[in-house]
Amino acid sequence: IVAAWPPEDAAVVGRVDLAGYPYSTFLRGDTLAVFQYVYDNRYYGYGGGAETPVRDGYGTRVTLIDVSDRTAPTVLRDIDMEGWLANARLIEGDAYLVMNNWFDVPQSLYELAWNESLGLPDYDYDASEAEQAADRAQARRILRAKVEAAVATMDLDDILPYWYSGQDGAWDAGERVIDCTDLYHPDGVAQPGLLTVVHLDLDSPETTTPAGTGLYANG
Picture 1 (cartoon, one colour):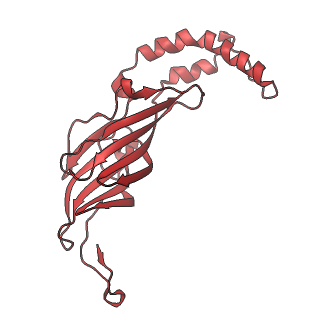
Picture 2 (tube, rainbow, N blue to C red; picture 1 turned 90 degrees about the vertical axis):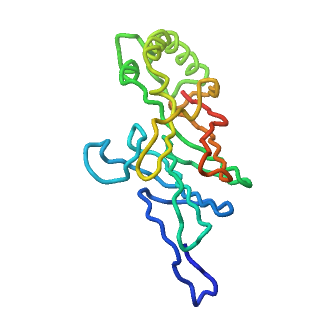
Picture 3 (cartoon, helix red, strand yellow; picture 1 turned 90 degrees about the horizontal axis):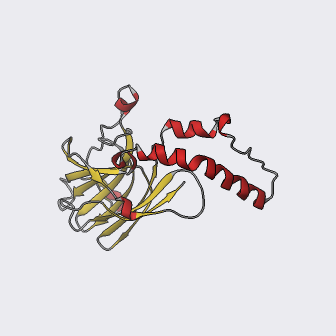
């Protein structure tokens, strides 16, 4: 924290050590929210990075700090969320975070696309839009039952993003950011991912919980 006025007397008056890679902040009264990327390299088999409970070793951390005494800022808690922050807005005390996540799709589903024995149509980049739509419809008829069978074996907790609350390096067990009832699947087909809008109440930094206000799935 810098006392910046007057400029000739500017000086650092307070400091907090952060484990992640900070890239943005929100200030609401005496509550400072610091957004960070966190990487836990233990997940990939070597040391370094920031310890985080997120399941794939990569996520977004919101560190909530009490700055009522600018010379002695105090970390209230950390909130780690699976996925990466695309953007955020602060409206009075309400912070809205747009998060991106990938589905952890089983390798067997990717292998289906390259299984020549299934008789999938070859994709023709020069075909007309109507011809490509017909090929996609044929592929869906071939793949739907196999995809549904594979998805039926998946646990929802392995698909939907989680958030975790921590303090002084101790973390809780985590909770889902959203549930299946919050899902919307658009008509367009893209890569299998999630776009989640998450709400945090910066007027209640010690008790706020990330609540998914909307989620869109492409795939």
